[in-house]
Amino acid sequence: MYFPTFDQLLIDATVGALSQRSVASALERESTDVQSRVDAIVRALNTVTPEVERLGRALIRLTVESGSAEPGAAGMPRRGYRRIEWIEAAVEPLRNELGKVKFQRLVNALAMVVGWEALIVQRDVCGLSSSEGEELSLWAARALVAAARSGDRSNT
Image (tube, rainbow, N blue to C red; front, side, top):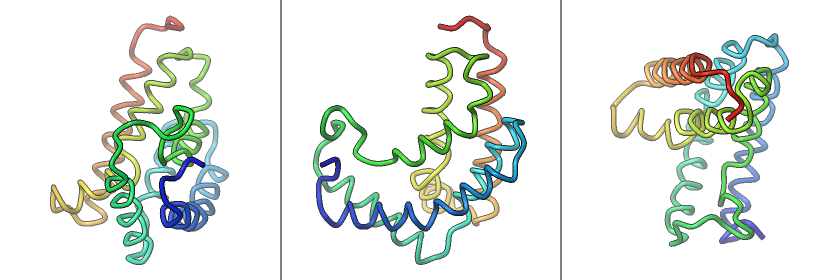
């Protein structure tokens, strides 16, 4: 229903299943310290085998080739829902502190610096090694969390 092609559904399910264990394990090991939890997700999602990276790149290709820049059925994102759930779980301790709008902004911003798109930019555009790319994502994620926390404390 949410996937434009059957291939995209299969690849998304496979990549999600392969990533789920490492992300869940990373979050379980961490305390309620948000930065430690975000760091754990960044590391888990940056640690991929070449085979998993190929699947991730295929998923991006299928998403791009689907032709529509609009969200999928019923306004749902065309992919990435697992990543959003993982990020929300990592920053959950900030939900009340930030309020609904700022919390969602932080989740969306982190989704831009963690995941397949970030990994492709790190490697293909910036020419970074895996470890350099991970450090860049850690730096960006930390900056976003700090920026979200330093703003005014209203719930807007």
